[in-house]
Length: 104
Image: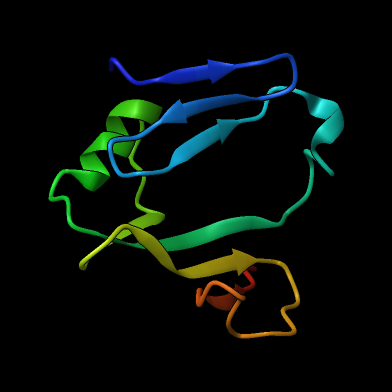
């Protein structure tokens, strides 16, 4: 996909055309638990791009329906819905709305 990739011995980042990087974690010792039920159920991202979701489908080679593009003035996360976690705050310091989603 001709993206900027930064690799070091602990972390790998893929650059996106939207002003942020995605970290790929391959070191199992830094992941708290691979068997954890906690995951991001939905991530709303404000973007000016019309091909935002298609970029992620192409990058990950699968439907990325958990990433929901919301057209706005800049690229930023606006809401995160997280499975199987208790949240004490509804908004993080960056203004992202946090919600709990427990799936049975």
